[in-house]
Amino acid sequence: MPLGLSRKCSAIAPSATLAMDARAKELRSQGVNVIGFAAGEPDFETPAPIREAMKEAMDLGMTRYTPVAGTLELRRAIAARLLEDHGLVYGMDEIVVSNGAKHSLYNAFQAILDPGDEVIVDKPCWVSYPEMVRMAGGVPVFLDCPESQGFLPSMEDFEKLITPRTKAFILNTPSNPNGCMWSREQLEQLADLAVKYDFYIVADEIYEKLVYSGEKHYSIATFGPEVKERTILINGVSKSYAMTGFRIGYACGPRDVIKGMVNYQSQATSAPNTAAQHAAAVALTMPQDCVEEMRRAFEQRRDRLVELINAIPGLSCRKPHGAFYVMMNIRGITGKRYHGTELSGSTAIAEALLEHAHVALVPGAAFLDEGFCRISYATSMENIEEGLRRIAAFVKELD
Image 1: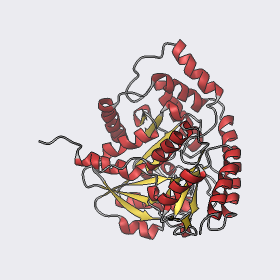
Image 2: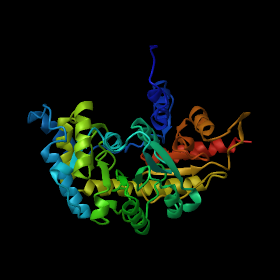
Image 3: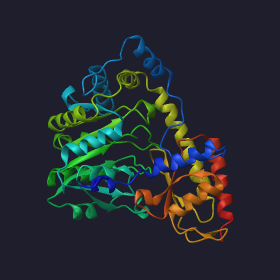
Image 4: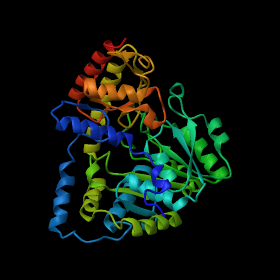
């Protein structure tokens, strides 16, 4: 038999967001001053009590394996946070801690999908959702959510996509890449469909604390017991607590699904980092003032970024209600030329901005939405001002 990669591995695309971020870092290593709008990583320092907890873990000898599902301390902290924030009750056997929320998502799809099972994904979508579904043998089925609808789905269109093979829907609110949020009414309609057609809701709530303009985040698992038993709730500490490098995420859901995820994790990675679990437990149980401080700063950055984008001829964007991303509409400059080179689409525009304006953002094509580029405002106000000045100057040179 010939050597080489499997067909399954060969079909998986690399993460476009990480690839763009890597290219930006490469240019920086060469001395280029690159403004980075690509990575979804808070620029704030991890709060001091969390850093101290990480150090404390070492002194307490927390250097051994923990149970595969995570420490009892952390699972209790997760349960307490969900009870306080949403009134949700989860037992210790309904929670599993993984190596980041991305790992939790991966485990969930591996646990629930058989080859050929369909997962509905509304797009534009985070780059990893369809790839994770494919890695588990599933088939992503895409639901178009155009900018004219606020990047939100028509529930009539949603229902038309449901088939006997529909196993799950991925709910991401607030959304990466566009910061849109589902209303309570839409969530109620989704809950009704999940019960009617008996499919899982994989609810990625990693941005739940980053909500603006007086909007309210509703956890889909709160919409009744029949919905909760069909919900796999995914969350983590990376975004809300600026703990991306700690790699702690978690899933809560039906006992049989969580048991399957634990079994899968036991053979793949074992438990997450022990000391980081202790730090995450401190993050979830300490006073949450630091989360609100970051949220307010993100809201101010969002407002300024949206103002600057909409002041550039040929570019526009909607004001998002959550997360820390803006989908910038680039249709007004697509097809134009920069010093003789045609900007044929979002990838060409993103590459030209990086190479010539030294601004890193992610092409909309990566999120299955050509005609846009995603900008992360998880960076300083100074970088936002300078980055948009560079983009404006770049646009002025187009013909």
